[in-house]
Length: 199
Image 1 (cartoon, one colour):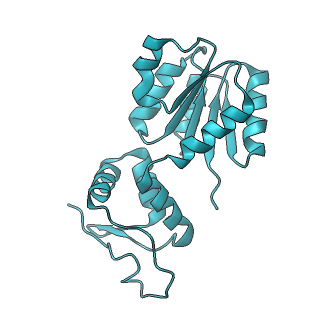
Image 2: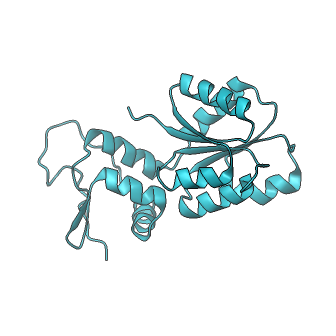
């Protein structure tokens, strides 16, 4: 089973290390960044499933980071941990980008439960593609022109919300196609029943 990738962004180093140790102990892979600028650079090199971020940081604050990441990867789950307090206007301003807003000091058990729920409630298309990536990493399920797209490639396209990823995501959500692959042995041509040409 693939481990979820989490990026923790916090300028308080001791707290950053506590978060990382707790999250990794809970079975996730966790990378750390001490400010938004470092985090953005890391983000562009790796697809993360969840962003755990403070708001007040040097170089690039949390809101700027969230907006930038959501522009590039709108399906990413975001959890804010901040000492600013649960200010109504602030929460409303960022609500469309954020799964949960937690105030400091945060209970670690509550944090881990929130992370678990956020990952469980990720986009259904991504979840289906992730399962298919694990089971059938090399089987093409989409053909565009002469290029074949495997579940792994499509997963990245949808995560990054490229034009192809957006179109695939939207069409699949609308069509309600069941992506569960039968256990029986079937031919490659029949494997997913959705080898498709997209213009």
